[in-house]
Image (spheres, rainbow, N blue to C red):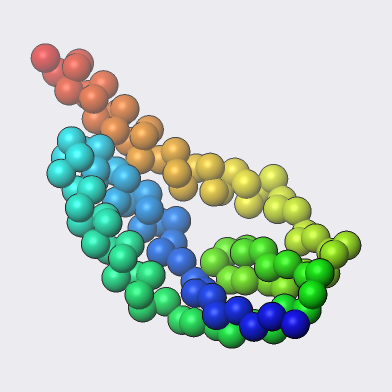
Length: 107
């Protein structure tokens, strides 16, 4: 039996998307703010203590750890959940592309 001390929770997809968008729009100047926010967020996340029996493993889902046995698996994400995750990360790129296209059209 092992006792693990792990961080739980996460920064959140909307925050990642906002920071990525601001980093693109500002040409990378926003990256230090993103880094500071990530560090502060990781320091303030709750800490959990888990008892993990021998032969078991820990997998994260939505920022929270789950102890799984040798033949256990997390339920696969639905197509809708996968699409929402993809859109959350792709939206900053699409917004930046729209801004660049608008600037190109105006010039």
